[in-house]
Amino acid sequence: MVYMGLLQAHQPVYRSPRESTQPGRPQPRIHHTNQVAQTKEKLKFNEDLRKHVPPEQLDKKFGGDCDFEYDHAKFWPEFNRLANEKRAQCVARWKAGGSKVGASEFELKG
Image (cartoon, rainbow, N blue to C red; front, side):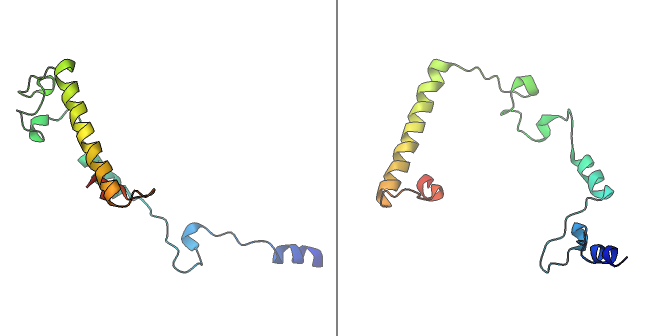
């Protein structure tokens, strides 16, 4: 009998996260059904995209007025020129900042 009492006295106490005894420890967030309902109302399926994107910028496939045709020979060289220009600016900022490893990306990209 005494032996059983010792075992029971030394058993760890299990608490749920909500019953945390540690001060300052954040309590887990509980999602309530009204939050789920609010999220459901925000979801839109097959809605007219013209409500969110100007028709002149929206592709015809999605009900817009823009008839965009991708021409690789036309767009790719311009894309490369812009990318190289931005990279050169970034390298110049890096060199001006002391050329140190670990420089902030926010500072380098400007």
